[in-house]
Image (cartoon, rainbow, N blue to C red; front, side, top):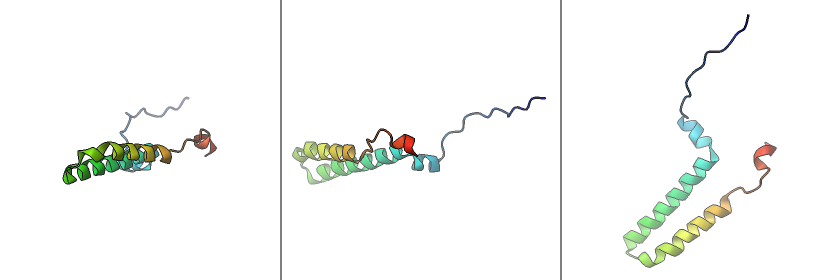
Length: 75
């Protein structure tokens, strides 16, 4: 006699699973930084500083990325 588990529909990720995902965490952090740049530039009325600040946010986000290829497999 064979036993099979019932097939459940895929459940969307919960908030806890989203929070544990490092890619989503990094994306939210970069989004907050970019929104801060945009809000500061619009509040101060200085559109000339937007490009260097956005490039700085992007550079710091790229520097924070774990680029070690084997890091995912070492765990």
